[in-house]
Image (cartoon, rainbow, N blue to C red; front, side, top):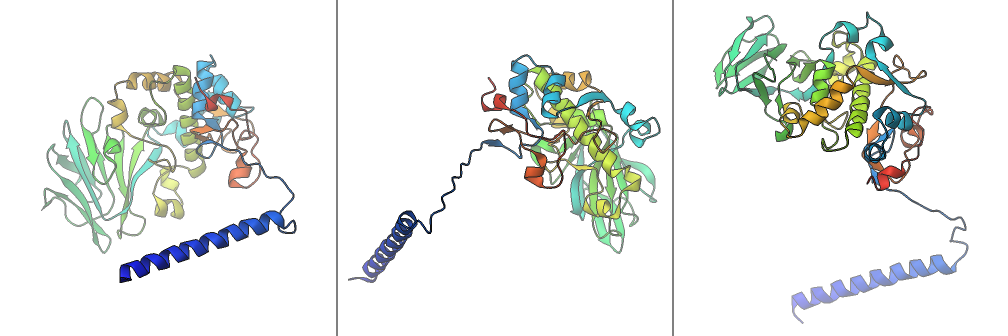
Length: 357
């Protein structure tokens, strides 16, 4: 035989031997009662996501059944109701006093932050080096670069703009009716922003830096992209309530940006990430979608409203977890993530998500 034929024969023999061993193991398990377990185990499941809290397809099905957004969230977060944020936190709380309290991380632990202006000029600010006196014109490629030794600078089209200085910076001037900022290194469908201020902060004396978007809560909500905007309006309103509640819960639990812990500064200098690690945030791309007006209506009609529960730990604002769908019933939070039971995150009927229509 040729070498190739020898190899083929060896392969066949090995495969045959493996098959015999597998069959023997199955036969031994079946015929030997000492090996078999008399208990019966039935595994059923379905859905997409962790299954805790609101089921998005379930919310859609409930909306098609004629349920209101308030009834939908009341079902998934048992014992909850809705209320205004200010009424929960008080007038002196940073959520009530700051116009843009939310910090959403876009890039973490970077040494180069590259961006461009779209549809109009922006302003770059370099702390301690000229203030906010630098104009970012459309068509220019700007970079904020970590130089080492705790120093950073702005560059534009390869030329130095600011001297080496602080690694604290900002980009301002975005507006829906004006200029937008496009940031390199992000997914193309979520790399432009038209609301808020881009902030650069370093957790390690300039070795690297984080890039976050500082925003008002309602401005942030316009960029949230969690469900199709074509869904029934009550399902969209339920999503707006859950999304705003989750963001509010995060802000309360982590405090104002000025008081971020060393761990929070090191991780992201943020309350949340702009990804499904927290919530899916697309920024300006949302507002250019053909059906954005439906989502805008859902956000505006629930403005400043969150889901509350008298036993929720963060000023009565619930940790409004949600996921796509379930196999017909949501999960107990303690069965999935451990810890103690949370009375508003208990398993609930979700037959709607099996077939929303």
